[in-house]
Length: 173
Length: 140
Image 1: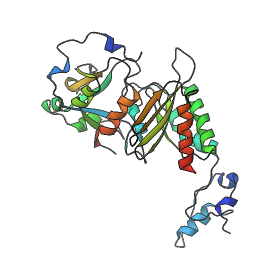
Image 2: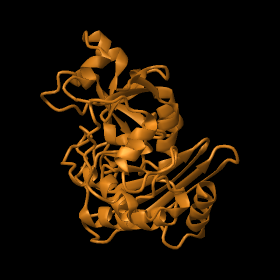
Image 3: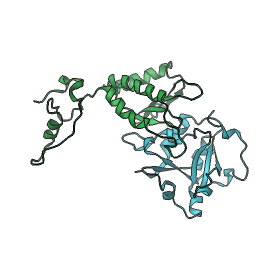
């Protein structure tokens, strides 16, 4: 039975699943969807809402495994503190239905969340300098159309960061 | 604080004065630093100095050719890496300087190696300009 998207719960698709289509029939795209989600099939074209924590964990996991020199120029492995902080914020933002950012490591062992759209880019970067033992959160924004561009090392208190996130939320809704 | 080497005097013999604004610099880009719509361009994080304080490494394309190497040699042995190119002119327009040398002793491309020196930390807006203007030579 097909359900409309607004009736799907977050838990609907959270289960281990190995896709094994039956070999003796020709599959249509509807078959594939119903095979993948046999209990609660989704309407074609609808993107199931997977819990934000799962998406964040899956996105971040490969970055945690990066080793010294992962960029071929001596980049540091990612600091757990910085990755944890980025992961936490990512969960919050995805829970608020913001679209997923690119997860980009930095050479100093940090990670950036980067949102890019035509002519615009917004990123929040988490780094944990060894000598400080804290996570430094910076942000960068550019809008090529308006010419607005700024960078801040106080992303936690800079009101422009909240405004940029609100803009992303508007785009995502 | 990331520009420890930039404070040191630059050896005149290695200063990149012999390079013209049109000379092309090459830099590797690992998969993790490819962003935007599935990885269509490098992140500005791909144009930062090394965490040990050494300046951003590049290879000078013209010098590579003079030692019978190509840009493919720059990514040989680096699986799934891209290679991007930008000019010395762009670098200088950012207030940075190209300094020849600085290669590892065992680097077969050593003569073509250079560092992009900046008087202070390379800012995100500066690095963004490189990310947006560079040309992709290899982009797997």
